[in-house]
Length: 415
Ligand SMILES: Cc1ncc(COP(=O)(O)O)c(C=O)c1O
Ligand SMILES: N[C@@H](CCCC[NH3+])C(=O)O
Image (cartoon, rainbow, N blue to C red):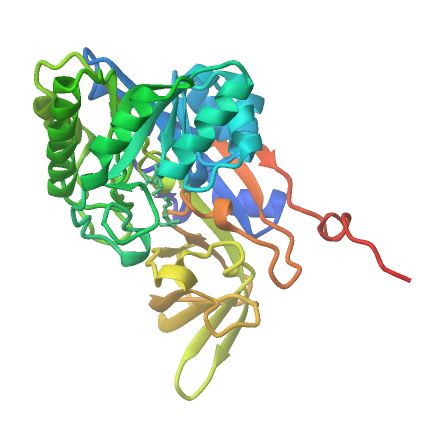
């Protein structure tokens, strides 16, 4: 579903005109559609109805308490990568028994917090992490449920910065080493082998890398079972892409059917960690054109959102569609660079967009619900944007715009 539609020449989020939101809450502002979030989660989970499964929303993609709470109420679990994300999940009413803990650098304090909360599983990413987890759990008199994150060494066919299942990156353990590390895990008193985990990358637009990874994981599961190491769940990570421009990622039904078919009759729970696919197209970044600037080479639309608000274009040269909130009637369309006020040449939101603009116009940067606000910063002492959730004709402020004072509240001048 696309909750962002033009009605009478004005872009709306569900039933609410985006210029009304800008008028009330100013810009830059992230706007999410509750209906789109719900629909994405429900459609994803529906594909696995009748199969033992757990959908763990990847918190890093959109850690807003309101978003987490919505998913928790729909029955979701959560994929976390830090103690901070665990605290968020708990504050949002998430069930710790549905939490998987990924990440290559878990600290002792984070392990303790997760053990005390009683999470579903630790996705262990190295031999040294396994030993540390065993020690920490022993100290607390607990047994930590573990999966090893294995690198199936398949090409995710995505941007190199967000491909994670290959041999030469920092994530997970090499496929070839996994079996012996599982034997080691099985011998340790304070960890219990529960599953096998993999996550091969993000923004995947083809099904085949998922299936190749699953095949390799199943070979390992069979080897482990033959060795007496029982696997209760397989975690296939996240990574399903969304349409930013003209991509055609696998749809949820097709993905679920393919995964279920691969699993066959095995009595193993399937765990997933989708992030972007559940939130990416449920959000936009609303921004205002501050200035139009015409140079010999280019036309610039200088807007009030910047790389600190949405980092993806600067970081990955990522494409986000940019739409005018009100369809212009007077001025002629021109090709613009859409740039922010930050003092970096890399501070752009979009290149070469044909738009009919005037100063003061509002623009919506589309597909900004994932890795938008979550990767934002205060660079150039810019307060982070407000966040709004629209529900039908209702508008909820789910995060206030930061104030300048908050940005230096923790600092002190040394006399
Ligand atoms: C371990 C892990 N799980 C899940 C995700 C979520 O990925 P995506 O947003 O592509 O679904 C990520 C991010 O790539 C990740 O690193
Ligand atoms: N942050 C990235 C995805 C990385 C996923 C993190 N595991 C993006 O915006 O696309």
